[in-house]
Length: 249
Image (cartoon, rainbow, N blue to C red; front, side):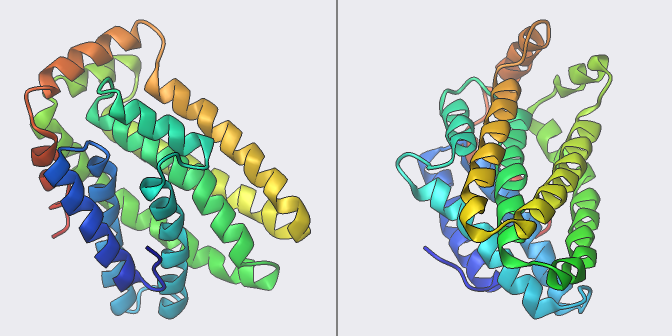
């Protein structure tokens, strides 16, 4: 499945989300959130919010295709996506971990690579403002994401005892990851094409290490995660997917 514009991205995400709900597959949590973000991006494109709406639509498709390739592969090529999917399939991750694992792989690797391969020189500089505008969309959705998770994870507030609420964890992860992705993209864009695969491998390895830390935190956080998971386990994944898939629409 390959998309060429934002509408086709949404069509493919519709199928992934529906399939995950039917199969009770918790990989659908990230897919549902991704679909909601994409709905908001499409609305902003239609409203003329971006400097270049058609460019953003094309870029959105290139970016999403990386996720589609990983999701549909029996064994995702990227290490960070394998770490994410293995952790989700294990049944040991809580909803927030599940989302953070997807965010980590898709932004720290995919976003950096697609941006750096698509734009170079003046074109990259010209894309920066629209790149940053996506941050505003993500930030606007964080409170709704947190409220949705809270419906199924009543003990999630325990994470506040570690100095970060789940809101700030999501916000920090998104902002920091997108800043890192932009910096990495500038490096990729400056490299000769034959050297870019090595940079991509380095980014993948770094994202895989971070994914492992998200999936298997050290004590005492690991114990608190287990407590949170027990409160979430009574809810079917399909219900959680449905809730995450209704944040925007």
